[in-house]
Amino acid sequence: MAFNNDPAIPVTRRFAVVNAYSDDGIALPSRQTRNSAGYDLAAAADCICPPGEITLIPTGLKVYMPADEFLAIALRSSLPRKFGLVLANGLGIIDSDYVDNPDNEGHFMIQVLNIGKEPVIISKGERLAQGIFMKYQVVTEEDTPLGERLGGWGSTDKKKDS
Image 1: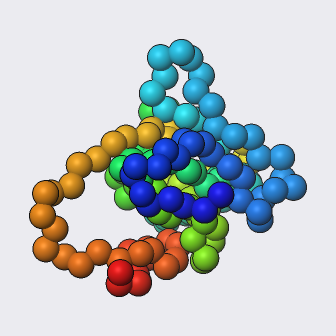
Image 2: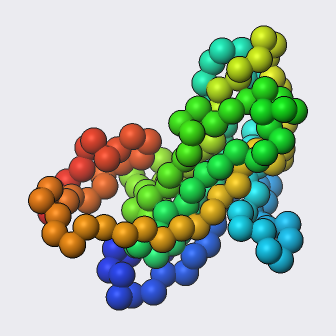
């Protein structure tokens, strides 16, 4: 299922495992209680987070959502206290057109900074963050020409003009 950027055509909101992790037993995110806003996101592999450094922790996932939504990535509240890890970019934002991009199939990662003095070992399956689907608004008249996403991580700098 490729990305659909026509807001008039409904898109199923769902997570999927990227091909690179298809044989790794990655569980799809779930909410833990009926009123939980976020879907728990876990590490897809064991990772070492060196002190004072940023580590990209793979999720093994991509996400489909309507064109007027994004997935907000927020760290679980216990991570700073338990591991000394903080979300390096403050709030992760996964745009709806990031899915199925040619660079990395839309695989999104969790970017953490180890503020402690020792390396932190994250085990595969460790729940690290929450993904929360959110709608957004745009200005009525856009002055900037908008293009199509061509790639993965940091790819809004390289886009095809439409």
